[in-house]
View (tube, rainbow, N blue to C red):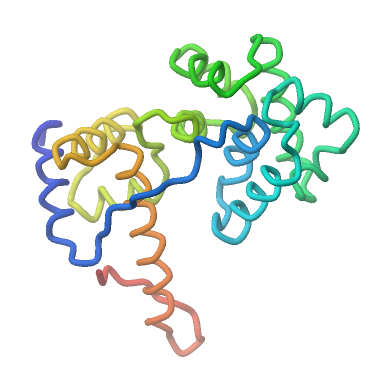
Amino acid sequence: MNTDSKVSALVAFVGSLSGFKISKEIDGNYNHMGATIADAVLQANMKYESHVRPRINKIRQQHPQATTLSGLIQLLSEVPTTTFLDWRGVDRANRFNEVVELLSREGIDSEEEFKAWLSSDSNLLLLQEIRGIGPKTADYFRILTGFQTNAIDRHLLNFLKKAGIKATGYAEAQTVINLAADEMGIARAHFDHSIWTYMTKNRIQRKSKCHDASNKCIETDAE
């Protein structure tokens, strides 16, 4: 199956799902460097609604001075990063600090400047030199700053699998999903979030429906 065939198959699969809804709003475009970096650093393998979004809202409300990178750096000279993030773990705090240090070296101050910097693939590679940041998080930074693309994670890969599509790697998975969004007339970043939301809710529903004698969930492929 070539890429065009995979795109057509994905479009057809989405059309067959009665419970699939297109997200009209997505997180991001904060115009707040502290919130943007925090969102990208905290979101991996976390429940976004309960663990990430409340912290991002708090950062935006309580730290208006962190809108720029220079303001954020000044704030972090007075407040520990773990306090700023409201996060006990030092790994993500260290990752946050490394992103801040990289962007400072690169001369970035505003989110507009950050977005322009992210337009270069070579700069995405610089981000990925930071431990814990891979292609998915690098692309998620792009989404948060207004790019129309997707960030491939296990939810998007499992969605492709459900559609009977086997991608050869990250790049092809991203291309197939982006082109399917274009064909359906959906903003790429919104399609990304729509798939993520569908798969997340579907996983929770499966776990609540099926239990064995040991009260452990046995997941099925029910839609």
